[in-house]
Image (tube, rainbow, N blue to C red):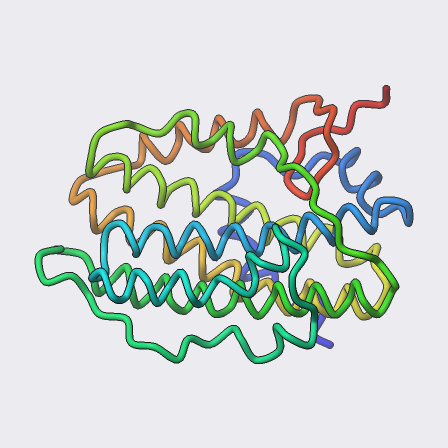
Length: 258
């Protein structure tokens, strides 16, 4: 297993991008044995939501109608499992790769860039979903739906409501979510059992690439300097991470002792 030290070059720009580190109080809470089920289930759902977010982006902005239906079909087994209690680890095996064609809209100026980066991201997120489920099953942790934390909602609430700024903001938010996930996997790995630690370290490279892909797309689509917009979302993200939070989840803030 590669050590965290071997990933410092990869983690340095992520830590510089984020406006605050994960608080020690969250790491202490997350590393406790009685938090494991919540961390794994929420991680599972975060992988699905990350894939869904990328899928919705390319459905709305980048692909033709036939491809949009193909994307929905691709996600159906995962959504059936997560939201409808249908399916199992066995039925999800090998489903992370799409077998149907995905075609760009002829009238969209940034279709192919979105498709290329987001399709790779989706495949990886769905594969990670399966890997988390494997870890849960190996520990006898049953899946049960849990509500989302305030984190993504807090970021989305600051999005612009006019295009193309809405799309740019969605991409910036995606960058922060991926960067924070990468940072937290690295922070948690030393406290976890060997198999989970190895898994978390294996995720660092893809999560770091995802955050960079989101930022590159945001800059390309904006066609202007977006550093102030990125900084604004960075401040919002840091506040959500560094302030007291009654709801403990993978992306929650400082655990409230009460």
